[in-house]
Length: 530
Image (cartoon, rainbow, N blue to C red; front, side, top):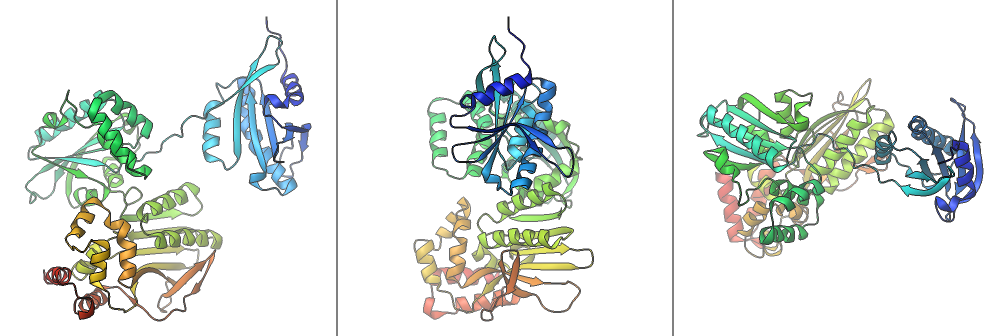
């Protein structure tokens, strides 16, 4: 029969046997008093130092009821230690030890994933004498995913609403059968039948973890097919690319069942947020019926709201963004910066600019920030098509800061140093001497990774302009950020790429005999005339 010991008994035992917690821990004090000028003071169960001299704050709990308070107390003690000692967050650690973890595991995991502290949790096993016998370190639960659609969407095309509805039902049953649960099928009635189709069935799924997808894939595929797919994944380095391939593979046909036959569609196409911005725009969609599965059943969103999320303008797109963020609300700031990193993955200049603008806005205590951008990372397409459709092809960045009494503006533009580009060098270096390889790079998306170098060779680069108040008539000025502040750039005058300057650039480039590449220049001339 086990002897019952108090929480204080367990604390005193561990204070004498700190190696049970971690080798090398040195006791500083039990029940260390911490004064709090802004609330209740507290007593740290065990105040120790580790082998590197860092403070270790250890909180010990025995029951579920007490364990619920443990994390709150740890957070308070961390703040009080920091206030008393002026130490950095890298100079102390937090440990919570509890006999019971039933009520503690979920809040511990949430705290672990969202705190900046070095945090550990351990389960105390008691011996027959009621004292600690062993400590098992707790692995936090996986971070709970927020609602986030995978970038890999799919469309089936129909000319009959009954067939479209039947296809969506068949798709729903198929996805649930293979183990996917969180997804939607949207039955779209198009406003305009000029595309030769009248209805779409649009599929998108919640982005799950790589481990989740891999488990289903390993169950559904085997042998050579599975081996080839895993070899394909090994050649990838970006986690987002790997996750996208897994999200596609997980519902792919295998030898046992064919989704495509069950859908009974007249056509199909791959989609993504940028394509959704066309097909799911308010002008294109006459009516929508959405079949929701799993967590989307409970999602507090209208059908139109879900379509807006599929378009990815507030996160999810890698080309476009249109976000308004309250700077008093940290989750909105975090969402803005995450979307920024996605859109400007291949554009480090504007990516860094936006992070600097956000820091500047917080420092200046702006109330909100509005950001709109388009960044296609394909300067050659931009140069050819901007004169005809600037809204669709010309990259831009517009950030407006809203203060109580005024608005401040930042504008990202492309500038040209007025030097004539050497087309032949560009084709030789980036397209192996064959301008036709440009289409290959566009098809596989590698043009985006080459874009910065191509721009530099052409004498183009991204830059940032600033206007301190929208209500004054002074033109925006080129600036360079330095920490939280910025200064006006003193470099020589350059020309910003707009419709007319784009045509000027093209005329200059195409007529430049010194760097003439007949095939490429002819292609550009033809495009300019179309």
